[in-house]
Image 1: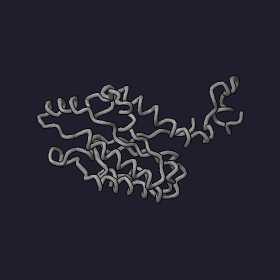
Image 2: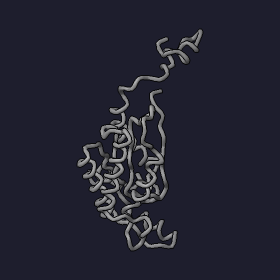
Image 3: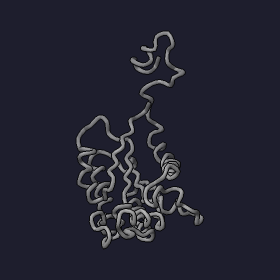
Image 4: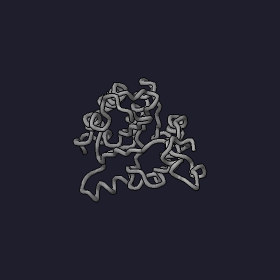
Length: 205
């Protein structure tokens, strides 16, 4: 009852393409519906090995610059840095992903160590820009834990992986939305006899 959640996920995309389409998703102008929080979650495709997957691969330096460029654009579109969260890619389970690659008739096209370099670059961009960051690559491997359950096929998040992401992302988002007023009342506060007073009025009934 505070804000709408808009998912703009693009399967297989990298930051090179995301940077191009970002103005279509959040345009500049004096919009009354300026986002209160925006997450940017890229790196799993950018970090694909150039020799095995040149279409999705983006060089590390360009990846970092693309993230910075998107942050700059969002700021120019009226979304301050305090509302932004960068999310670093999760680790890669190479054995599981190699099996998926073989099923598709290709070689292993990613390495966890390389994904880690991109995750580190994401964290550094966030620091340089002074914005929040969620380092999934590091968090999922803390204490040398087995992170394979967080991934459905070695690359993409499983239900457990999505729960892990949410549990760490929500505290960052909550800080940004906690002060927002309720647009509609809590159900116990709806006037029983005349709910229209609560639901169509100014919210004080």
